[in-house]
Image (cartoon, rainbow, N blue to C red; front, side):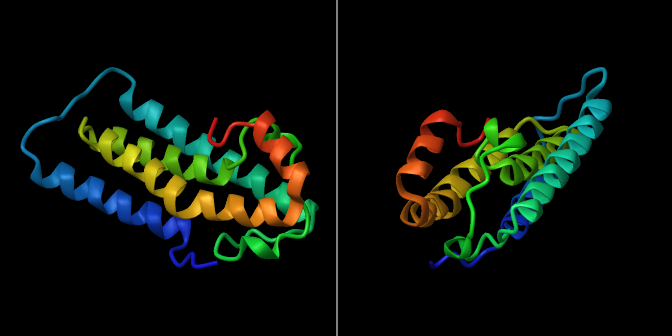
Length: 150
């Protein structure tokens, strides 16, 4: 595996780019009733999703190390993993969207979409190869039944 960047660090880099874009782009600001509340709800959802996903990995006694997915000992397909193959990455995306709402710049949506592209291209696809090599047909069936993000 040649994965080098931890996903939370990737999220922080995209979040920093969102901040800079908001700080130096003189247009694109928006506001609407409930914007801050929606941001807090998304943050809480991200925390809950992460906690559930980590608990399920712990219960299955498998690794949560995104840099070494080939060290996975069991395939988790129940609970939250019935709805999304990548709940922890979904939670990171929710944090970015919440941060974008707090900043109030519409162009941050492009950076959130960039995060999804980056994660798909440089993280998730490599994890999927490792999991496919490890779990074969079982993983292929799981991928058919469960969406990558939501």
